[in-house]
Structure formats: C-alpha cells, structure tokens
Image (cartoon, rainbow, N blue to C red):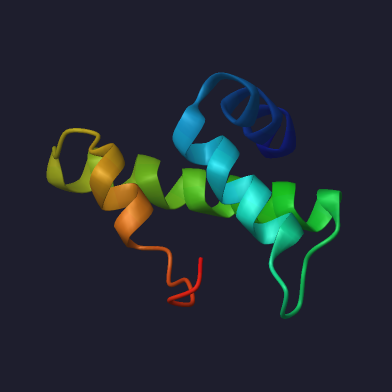
Length: 73
C-alpha cells in the first residue's frame, strides 16, 4: 500500500517527483527506480507522522530543505 501511495504522490506532487528524480539521477550512489520509490514512501510516512504528531501544516519548502544535496545540484 505504501508503494502505491508513493507512486501516486510522485505522479501528482512536484516536490516528491523532484526527490524521486534526484535519487535516481544523482552521481554518487544512484538508486534504481524501485529503491527510489521505497525511499519516497519512507519520506511520505515521516511527513504523515509529523503532521499527525505535531499538527503542523504541510510545507513544501521544508520538505525540500530536508534533502541534503551537493552544492553542484
């Protein structure tokens, strides 16, 4: 179920789509498509947990800021 949720969120959300694209195209240790979708599913679970636990609102800028990328990207 989480994999299907990840597929849906990657197809409908620009933020999660860019995370998936980054994971599959990064120079050092690129992930295969399935591995990247599982990583996106884990990220989605963490976002859900934070929203439910703290009552925070969804913030796309915070989501993208959590990803550590090399300066060249």
